[in-house]
Image (cartoon, rainbow, N blue to C red; front, side):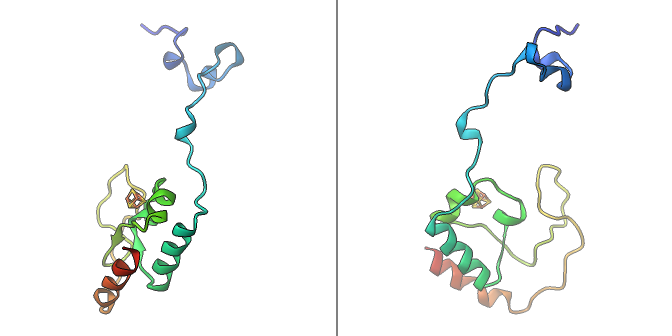
Length: 114
Ligand code: SF4
C-alpha cells in the first residue's frame, strides 16, 4: 500500500507541490559548461583531425573535465553505432561508408593530446 506522505510514493506532479517540498539536489550534480583552455585545445585538435568521439556523440557530462586534461574516447568507423542500448545517446542505425583514410589520422591526435 502506498504512503502518500513519502515523496517517493507520490505522483510526480503532486510531489512538487509547496506543501511537500523536495530536498535540494547537491551542488556536484550540476555540471558547468566547459570553458578551460585545455578543453578548447582538445576540441580544436579533434575538429582539426575531424575525429568522432564518444564524449560528444553520447553527450557525456564529463566532457569538460576529461577534455581539459587531454582525455577523449574516439569512435572509429563513423559516428553511428549498430547497437541499440537504451542508456546510451550515440545514434543507432546503419553505419556509413567507411573512410579509408581514417586509420592514418587517428595516431596523430593521440600524440597531441598526451
Ligand atoms: S573520456 Fe570522459 S568525456 Fe569522454 S566518454 Fe569517457 S568519461 Fe565521458
